[in-house]
Length: 295
Image 1 (cartoon, rainbow, N blue to C red):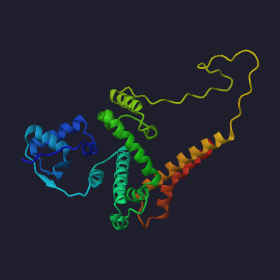
Image 2: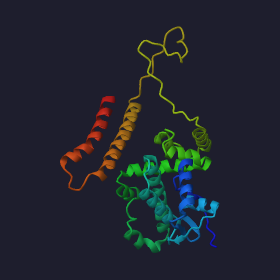
Image 3: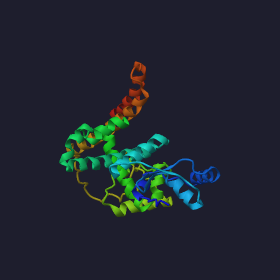
């Protein structure tokens, strides 16, 4: 009997099933058997992890088929493509997969770069183009989105090392955690990542809300009373600070506008009517209008 190896990195690429979905799969396998073959790379399982676990537990017979790949990165990219093609995924799950694809692709590209003998093949495979640009065309999003997705996926991977359940809750939107908050996490901030993972898993995570503005003439109860005597003149706002803040806001909004339009493109046919293109552009224009009114 063949020994099947479970690779934790490969297993972590699959969306974790909630208890109800897992129970339904278990019931189906008990009643109907395992009809779909498990897929192996050598002796390593790359598709069918939940079925393998249930079949092993209940001694349900199953079949296997093998696929050939040149590297781990090729396996990861195949698994990601398989999951995207067969599942209805949340936006966070899609972002995570795009980010993982980016990381695997970059690593694969690096292996080509280290081998001078593969330079000709590298160019024929399209590796002469920047990774973010190549993947942006594949997924119909902007290159900036691909790069942000890579940071998002890295942060989620770090969270999953502390708590797979926290990772599942975030990816399935059962916890409303802003993607920007994850992207801003440093990979070296282990304590911060662990604290966030535990808070999400235990249900104690609470998104911080901005303080409401203080009405003109009203005092802020959180601040101590002003000292007696002359009040020193407030330091004027530095123009450079204000410009930097506005540039950062502009950068963020333009990124959202770009993402919004790119996400609408797959629904527009090549010979689309002008009205369809205008409909796709309208939300983007509204975003810019909101920004203009805020500045």
